[in-house]
Length: 396
Image 1 (cartoon, one colour):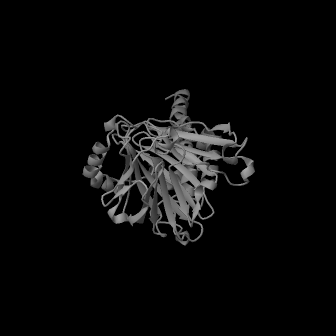
Image 2 (image 1 turned 90 degrees about the horizontal axis):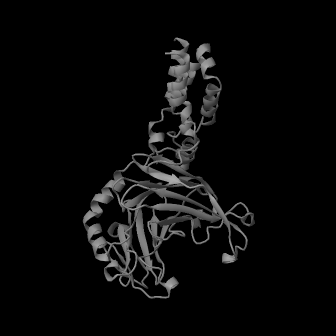
Image 3 (image 1 turned 90 degrees about the vertical axis):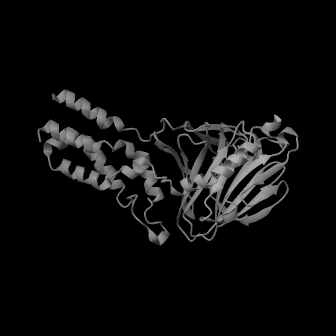
């Protein structure tokens, strides 16, 4: 092989992986941040609002997850989440609310007032994974959405890494089933159907998670079967993780609060929107499929392939090999120094290290470490091939 040809192969296999973040792929893509000036909305006159949207192309429905917050300097080191900070604008704006449907509360504090640290496409290909990370004063928090082929919903894992004692964990979910009733000056009949209860509009009930681990939220007036509305939505939780669930279907929003044990560090949920589906169809389907879905949700590995497959020890060994040959060092040039600096930067941030003093769960990567790896791992996946090609070029 000529030196020119080998160098071209080197570029394709190694240096061609130099994008800082894998932002676009077959399963999910991330839009650039969009900013706009708010009017006099909620006292935010002339403030700046930032929105980032991730679009999923897997499954039967084209889901989207958005982040939105007022990031104006008037809020100091915090942000204002307005209606909410994690929205679901697709496949329809009704159901799980596009303006904010998911809220995480630790010790009574909502993490949404803390600036978003990162929103990253963590995997795209066979699966689609979106990560959203906050470094709150109480804990590092990651909300991870997983899209799978031939699925009509999104799975979600909320990971917690405490910085101080956690005394309470509550996850709130908000939806507007099928139709924006009050906005359109019409009355509906909100309902929540679970395996153990039927909760009607105006009721506010707290039930055991063990008996109410999935819920279909719908409207008896705005039913596709009657030629009205977009269709129901639904959620599922793992009952072994949660203590109780509070349901409050109001005439406009429908709110759900899930209370978890304070020592829980991984929370697993699933969310569905059913555009064009009737209430009866969705209720019948969930009743039949719920146990199978629950088992899959409980056993699915949410770890991105890039993290799971990365062998940091092997990469360090390749760097050590590269430094033993002056010829290889010459061929690699600045690339070797770049990888050495990256490895030095993640010393002490090995994603597989454990921190029991913070309640870290053995066997799970640390949140901040994984966030840093995903932000740059694409640059370094091909380095071992680069070393071997450099050795070939050097005649070793």
